[in-house]
Image 1 (cartoon, helix red, strand yellow):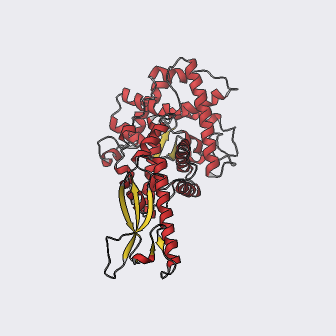
Image 2 (cartoon, one colour):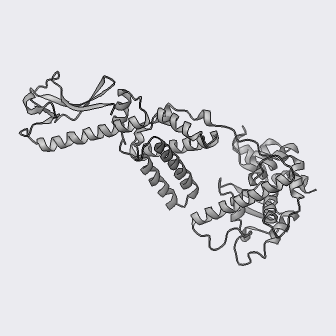
Image 3 (cartoon, helix red, strand yellow):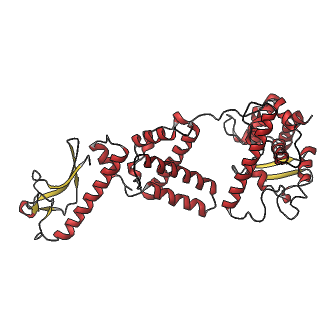
Length: 410
């Protein structure tokens, strides 16, 4: 072990009672730091074993006090081992920071499990999965360092983060790395708020270099028209995937999870209303002939189901079951749509999310004001006040979006 750790009697600090205080001496690369064991830990020179670093048996309460000294030494050794595993070039100052941090007993993987369980219990499966995946990436990194045990949260320093990023970069792009770092940062913030943890590594480690703009996924007008005009075999899954893709576009680039959860009782004669699961924003969508045709086609598929489309059913009750079903069906739709795009020689990645980007892009192409597009999608990046955005009436939004649907259908 790089650090030398030993209880010592400080003979150069004589107390008023004539005794000498007991300190823990930590030496790293010939640099020394002393840590007090408390005001009660003092004795005369002849009451201390210098070689063993403990009180002699005839000292009052020697057994109890020596047990505390031993526990302190073990804690210090544990800190040194963890530092050595994550940063072999640590200094005595690094040791001091790690050893004296509040919440030093918080273990990373264990704390991740605790947070994941909380999300699971609240039905927040999305966040539960993100935290679980981040924990697994940390665990995988530790294994490459031959660390098969948990590490304390206090041992995560800038050096650890830099090395973890190098590990992640072997399989991840900047967007995923940014997500993993944000998740770890959120975990540390929870520890600060709930556990008294007082070390914030992200004060010295910035996420900015990993924050990249999402690449544009929009199709050109003629490319989207080509997909809409594609003739799929009704006996194949591509037929249904294409219907869903069309429906999403015609409904302003509706998200897949919201399509899955759309219920029959949300549909009125000429419109339907829903709340976007991701943002909580309310939408009222006019039902045009093309969307009505798709809705009608699936009525016979699930007569006894509350859902419009045959994706979720009465068996999907638990949040985890619902999430898995939504994810599995999304993968299939994306697979089919990408196959269609390939057949049409569209050299872009086409997914359900393409509908949202394309709808917004076509609105802009058709000279719909940016402020209206911002209101449609609930964006906050436009430098216009919410009061101004809220002034757009439902008729204005529907008139604008009709341009984007008409451009594809006619």
